[in-house]
Length: 361
Image (cartoon, rainbow, N blue to C red; front, side):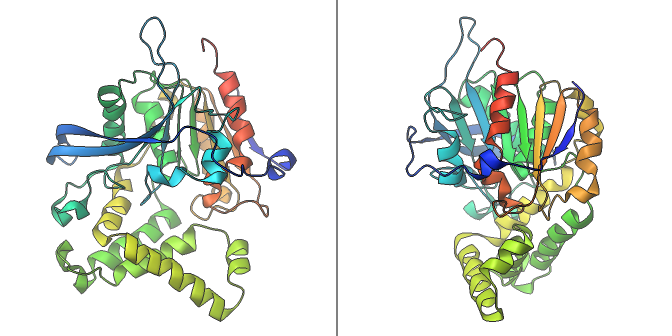
């Protein structure tokens, strides 16, 4: 298959799609899996690494004992598996009956990555003494969760949004025979660099250089967490939507203050710091030819974190043996980087990918 970048000019069927009014899929089941003496790439070891997860649907195996219907979906930086359910624009569009990932047919796995959600993280007590994990560690932990914790030995699909999209590229390289298909959303198959590195450094430096951080031993959240929140707000959407939501100086301050307040109340500076530093070992570039499964990368034209004008996706997808890529054009339905969670924008492409790879299923 020759890889093709398609700048889609018209998404009429997708943009006209309306969200389901109520969830029509089985309730998620939550669980925890513990990996003992987990060794990180940094050389550090954690006696017990706790991995939290949610599953929707039931696992199925063929006569040879191979898992036939597992779908792994990975979240973004500072997120968790909880961000996908219940969520009309994502879960209802994908997991409901007769939708692309109908939970009566698929076994959907939504893990909390290391350092995120209810999995082991700095704020649990170790603070800045928590092992310095990277994306390679996160993918290894996900693999062990699936294989050792859930008994899944093969995936019908591996996909993820943002950081989860980056993890998807790594999954394709590190476990090339594990899945039938890959779908990274809102990501690029290259080392973090340029503006993408710069905004992360701004947050990292703000926290580490904040006297109130106290080497991670603060009693109350340092003011630098507010800086982190502002940068996350700035980078996560597109200018048109931000202007629409905040058309005046006063309204902008109101919207921004509300967002920042929510982050400060619900997040933790050490967790944010570690989550952003974790991207330091992300570099799928040298091994893209090792990806064997069909891969469909989907980005949006208004993504400030992964802007299409860089030409990186168009260049690198040519090296993926069975890869293709799509850039969704800017519209009143896209949400900048956050378009990755608006399934109506891209779920027809997911259907096509699943059909292309359904042999034997």
